[in-house]
Length: 122
Figure 1 (tube, rainbow, N blue to C red):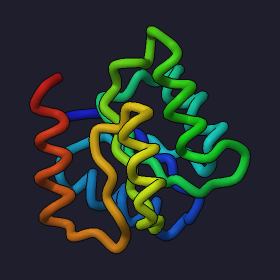
Figure 2: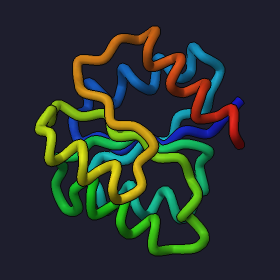
Figure 3: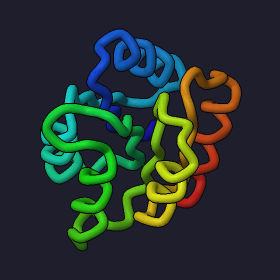
Figure 4: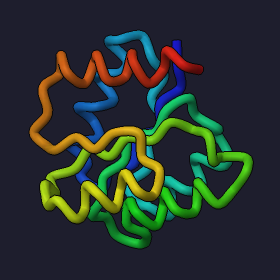
């Protein structure tokens, strides 16, 4: 069982991800905005982070940059799950150190494989 942090401002999407991850046997930690997500990542040290891009307080890019700048959280695998399909957003996310950039709506089988792949290296 892995501990996975979901940073997502839309409550329904966050709840759906939580249910999916729990059904897969993982522990889900939730944060409703970027600032909460950054604090949760630092306090909980999850095995994987799934993060939206567009959020209040701090956006996903700011969260990722802060995590990568901190040696205690720099190596946590990070995946963007976002409605933003803009090429420059994808490039920026990957350039900042995200491991994957998945656009919503996403396929649950593909998400299952992605989570397994990112957790395999831990």
